[in-house]
Image (cartoon, rainbow, N blue to C red; front, side):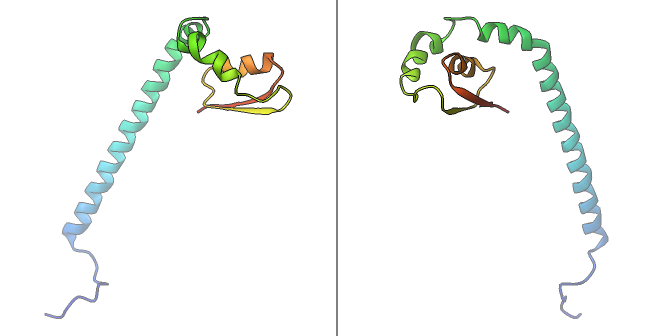
Length: 107
């Protein structure tokens, strides 16, 4: 028997294993897509309620502790301010009310 050159065609068993990997990959992709749809649908069903909660003053530590201290760290209004991780935008709205030019980004 001659040594393999590394360019021999794969055996039927290897082809079968590769096909099974493809099937498993396709199934996993469908499960992920289904989970993403379920998550998006759950968000849409609850978005208005969550926004109402998030925009209610004094319900969390932002309003009670962080807001005023954070605002003292900012430069004077009139400059471009980028709010990364803006969520529903409460800080962006606050900054705009104070005269900042705001670009808000969230994913």
